[in-house]
Image (cartoon, rainbow, N blue to C red; front, side, top):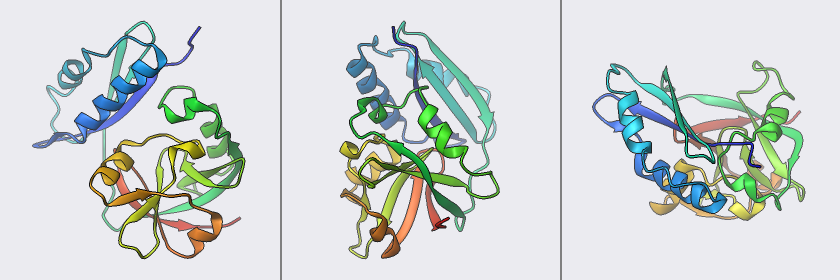
Length: 209
């Protein structure tokens, strides 16, 4: 029995609508197909209905379960300032690169919650997880990007054990990012960013405990 749902967290902006909507819906459909869920054909209409009366930026969370039920919650969203820098630390918790469910965004989040719980909110804005081989994978809510001086950001491959983030997919499709493994040593040799579709790309200050 499948005891989890698929998740998409989207940003809605007045005058722009949903940011990266096509990529979010494509991932949702692809994930549903992979897991044997019905296709989420009503998702777009339900999302539009959720923002029908919205006046300011909104954070929209959509869940979709194995029975085809869609639930949507909406909350006000305050975008980050362009010069925001997040403090980032490493988790002791490790990801298992053989766990294929890590490649799908679901409510099965125990490993991410364990990593986040290793630090107080005032100690880290985000916590980065490695896999069993010590390769950099992802944050608890973000994808990882490294500016290594080539002019194209490097982001870890899905095979390391991580989610195909929507922002990550967009940057790869635009040839602003490429896939490549990232080690701890690599992070010391370049500029480190994290990001997701809701917040965009964020400069990261890595603090080693």
